[in-house]
Length: 182
Image (cartoon, rainbow, N blue to C red):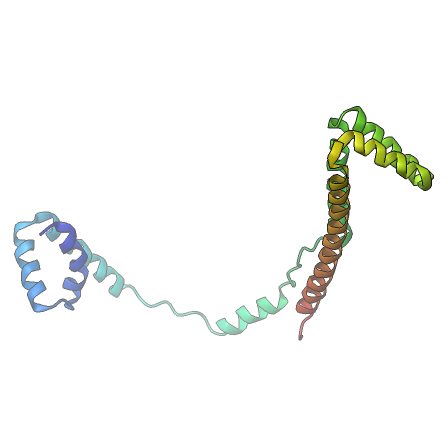
């Protein structure tokens, strides 16, 4: 058999916990293999060093001193971002993405952007112009594009509301967990 097999058994052999058949096979191997015999001597010397070293006992009041230092330690602070920072970051990213669309979209996209700002001031017939400009931009798929944009805005609004609600609950829970005695 290979030395690897016997090396895994030598710790048990040194402790005397190996079975009789394995002990016999290990004895035969140790007579022929100087490397495994040397390894066994090293194991036995290491075992002797470990059992000969004195036991270390902690000083008096060890537990009381450790617990007193734990009690005196400052309470850890939980880093929590404000909900407004989360919302502002999300809105900034969304508007940067929309702005990139208008920059990359060419003249029709910029015309649509101008009409959006004008529509904010004069909603009535300028919305019709916006739809016409969008029709030039999206072609026959204008209704699908408008529906997708409306759906995106609704989903964004719902996502922000859900994030704010979940964040508020988590923040209240974190505050309750950080109060001692609760």
